[in-house]
Image 1: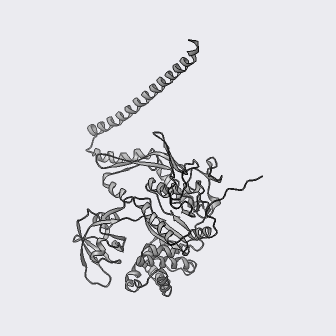
Image 2: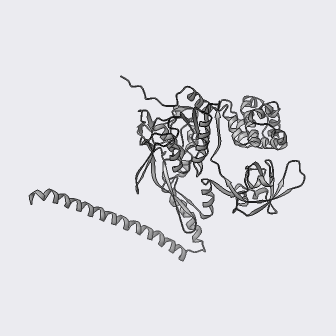
Image 3: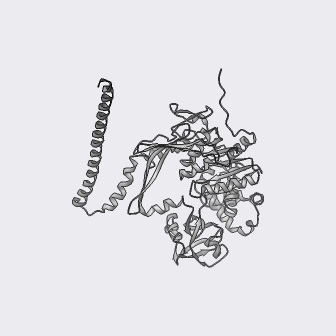
Length: 537
């Protein structure tokens, strides 16, 4: 009997622990249910006893977001009326008329007609203005972006009648358009720079992003490109699964891509399967302060596996994973269920105070004000959250992905005149007017280089200054001369976009973008693969 006593003691202790845990959990569960009942009781009290007539539905709709703000900045409530629009950005298509537009002077200006879409089929043109929708005037205060989306989108096969004001035409032209599925592209710029380096601008991680990336990479390989630049600047994220698929293309079998873990979600590690087609392709990833979530997963795994070089500025710092849960009324919550960790073990989620979303949202402004965009020395990393990449390079958690090579935001020639011209959208408005007035001539140029040569021969700076003056931005000769290059580049870029679209616009911008130029420099030098730090002996 004595030889079994240690085992009996152990079993007794274990049973005691389990009973204790059960009682503790039971008390915790009872407290939670009591709290639920308390909230439910409050709703009944208000509904049955409040002095005035009220809408309980409105109260609940307003309460839901406030409850979630007590958790973290990324757990959100989506009302039923907004759910479809919220999810649309991550879909591969939507049903509409097939245009891109901006609202200027309280009027919809069409700046792009999507190829093979419903609007192109009936003859809509870039530069057209939508004045009426279904025989109802749609200009002025009613013409908002949300209202335009509601008017122009709709079920496939339904019709919408538009009254169009076209440059040079005195009367409105009527078009009846049958809505159809419109593809949503998350990669609108993919081309080879200097006949050598593939460049891909990824706007978001959506349903079709991986397929679009693969098409671009295969095209690059066919044209014998020697490396690739993945531009994630401005990419706020999207589906984590798409980021995993993309990263898998560049990693060896068994490389950790990311892992997730939460209180109610056990640790899940995602590994590369070794079937990627670009495991040895030199890669550079571009990030900035608006690169978030899935962008940071991709950049983080490339950095931690020492697979490529990250260039640009520190990323946003979102290391929380959300899962959607829908309610019967069509509304939903996106609830944070786990944190994600890069291969080195770091969670790059930046600090936040529960219930204080304003402080969290001001983080980028605070980064700018303390000089982080202009000097690497102004960046404050959390020295208590230090991790090592596979080769032993130091990386930090708790505040985004710090690039391997920092590229500052150049404000040397920025003046108050230029800043006001941009913030008041005067350059964009001037360019749209110029493009409309000269569209026939400008459309004859084959690419951005030919158009640029023509634009540079025109007195566009003088014309813009006169236009801006008429809109209340007074001429300031010294400021204009100091910012001349910036103003002219912005004018050229806007007109190229208005006439030739996003791809040619990006090609032109990249000829002087310092981050892209640094990426090319690194690739040319054969330095995209990081090296182990030198040891001090």
